[in-house]
Image 1 (cartoon, one colour):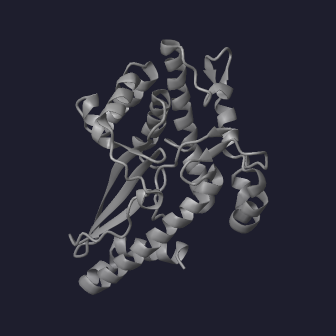
Image 2: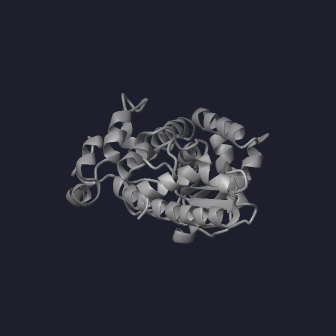
Length: 299
């Protein structure tokens, strides 16, 4: 059975209002206790190996640009070791209540599972770099975002799980050519003598949820299930390491938690705006967007 790496994106949603440094949500390491200190030697070795592989070099070049780093050594600070591999991306919203103007920033840490062989660490690094260096195609405060849209974006969107798995398998192919060590994680997705990656098979496998399907459709997505045409009751092959469930199920739980945090943030933001702002801010774009979000996605 192939075990997938973690999802990116939920990690945390933070809100800073009027310089008050009010943090409404912390990173996913709160939930998964990813607090093991980084081991520079392991991270450094994985970065060195990755930089010597064509597919890995391409990922690192993108990372250098994304994080304004001058060389690969400066990327060490992005990586930590933890209990599972995942990307911790925290969205920070900074709002001036006097003007209603909002500025957003995204802070990223990549956790790599500690204690695994170096070849597995390299593949995890490749996988997570795809998530970490790509801006999400969804907005947690979008009033029209649904669980089904979130699942689809997370699996098939730019920087999503399909792209991350393909990048991982490209690195795996390069690793096998250079070091003569093949990874079982990608073997069933390689065709034509191991020289081509079967993207469609990867895509289909992400939607196999086995015994979860009936309850998932009946209790959570309903008629929107038609927007996930590949959803299948076949036995799962790819599991989220953070959710310990097939990806659509883990992503559903992630979406529910993301929505809960975003709703709490928005309620606190609205209360602070009412308390601190002048009347004109109540007509601001930010204030209207907050109200639209609360009406659409929050109880």
